[in-house]
Image (cartoon, rainbow, N blue to C red; front, side, top):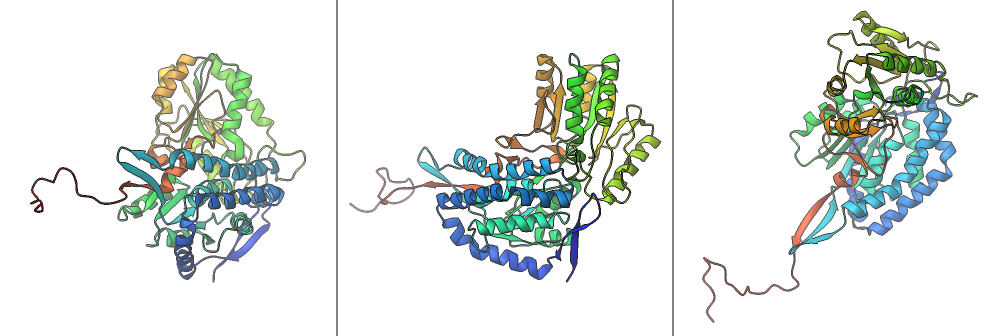
Length: 472
């Protein structure tokens, strides 16, 4: 038995300890889900909905407890962790609305179309939203009648265990939701299991690409991938520097830069407008409070997920500077041996062959360009396509931006990190496989069945050609 622990990234203390699931544990979980599938999928959707609503009420009741676990395991400030729990509860009604809108039985000509669950699906969760993002798969999957095996991030096992207990308290039958804890080895065992009908993953493009490669020989497996992005944020005149700077800081540094939609590349004009914006951003970045979730006054930003991630980010900064980046505000370690980092700002305009990679942390790369056409080209200079944004009062510029940018989430004069649960959420290129979550999660949690039906079979009035009719 392999025992592992989750660690508070702000101080290194142990939060949760338990065994990692091995092959036998994964096998038992898949078998339990398969055994529970017939009765769960045949339940009227109204009964499944009521259990989900009971779960939502339980989340509201236990908001403080679950938020504290999220904060301790992944470092989010209390205000942000509470927002995550609230989003989890709100997902239930959004999923009910989506299911009714996108999976309602309908007639088309002589056919009736109904929607059926896939069967047993696996959900592999990330660490940045350890409650909300897997919940965004689990809730619509259960509503559609699937049973689920959930492998949470190894950095947030306590959050998953507590959430599973709330599902149990809500009356979810045994075997309908099964949690297997562990690291990448456990995830690999689960994703490769032949008993899965679906696999829903949120995480890195590298891991998602490997899952897609595995699925090539399994055409029966429904695969939904959300893989992050190297997201561009363009700021272009006319706009007010102070307002734009606040939107940039929120876009780049919320959740310590660990949101999939965080701005990674800031594209600005190479003129006095751009310089004024950078100065305003630098002032605001210097005022950001970074700290443990329960510090007073409350921090805006907590740590990145662990000390190793912090070291990788600092090494990336050093590498970019070595290749010609100009540090406008150095990202620094605030407490060695932890994930606490100050926000960083690098001008990478002069860096040739910039790596097209998602830098998952509070490091924003600035690129100066001469024209708006150059800005559009630079924004699209990525193999990713999750999120993009424009800050400008020029509506015509936004119309061009919206028509040109290759991204699944495109915002105007809003933080890039803003995404609505009542809309689809996903991207293209290396950011996903055209199965957006959010409101559209209903689409990949069930499949249509088309039927042409009559009450009583009867001889047709016009006998088919090529078949000898019976004697009168």
